[in-house]
Amino acid sequence: MFDWNDLRHFLATARAGSTLGASRGLGVNQSTVARRLDALEAACGAKLFERDRNGATLTALGADLLPHAEAMEKAAEGLEHRLNAHHRGMTGVVRLTCSELMATIGVIPAMGDFRRLYPEIRVELALADAFLDLEKGEADVAIRASFALPSSNLIARKIREESWALYCSHAYAQAHGAPTRESDLSRHAIIGSEGAMENLPPTAWLREKAGPDAAPAIRCSTLHNVLSAVLADLGVAALPNALGGRYPELRYCLPIPHNGGVWVMTTAELRNTPRIRAFIDFIAPHLAAMARPAPASAPTP
Image 1: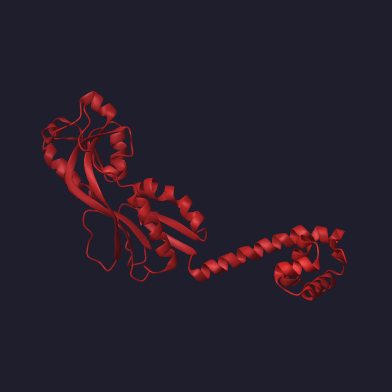
Image 2: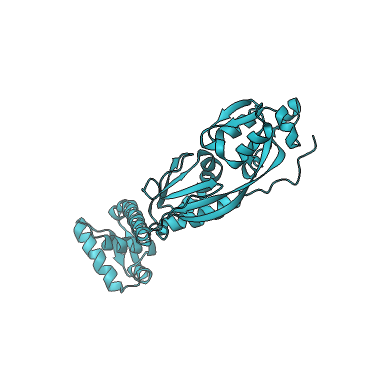
């Protein structure tokens, strides 16, 4: 059986062209290199080098074995890298829960850079508008947009403020005009909401200002669907400016006097786990950079 250390000396000699050059590269005595080569040739039952005072030249067998030894070297380096990463804690799985919309516009576009920094950490996405229970182990990290966080033992880091406004599409504005005053809302098609979306302060504000006679053009239970409905020219809806400002098809209409926030959260037990800390420290500034201030005023029709 081959000794990997013998193969290391074989590769060093093949690359240096002599046992002296190999010894310098490996930081060992020349006699050690020669002894390792002798052991390897004995295991192979054939000469791998023609050695003389001018150096060491690969035999036909040595040249044939060289690429296989290089493949073993690469595999050994990969194994060493994975072991080092494991000891540093920069390996394993980070189970992240967030909304599908947050994943689409914020998390997934950043994952290429994260993978280049931490190739041994795998991020698994659990996409849900409902909040998974971190304390029960349903996920390791959560990214949550909210107007108030419930009391818990979770560790929460606020990423950014989230201002909201009313938006419609430019096509809708051309066909029906755009609301520029609260009193205009009763005359417009409204994108309604249901489920958890129904009680958010911005959607409740829109419902109040539109009045009891306003019939929603459609009701949506997720922010992703609200965005899709506005882009489909169905009416006016409440959207965070970080989202509305990303789409040139959308027209800013009115500010909404309710600000929320975006948090990244984990448990006290996981907060200092290296892979969890690395992910949070990476994703928090990335998502913070997505913040967009509300326009100073609605554009002129």
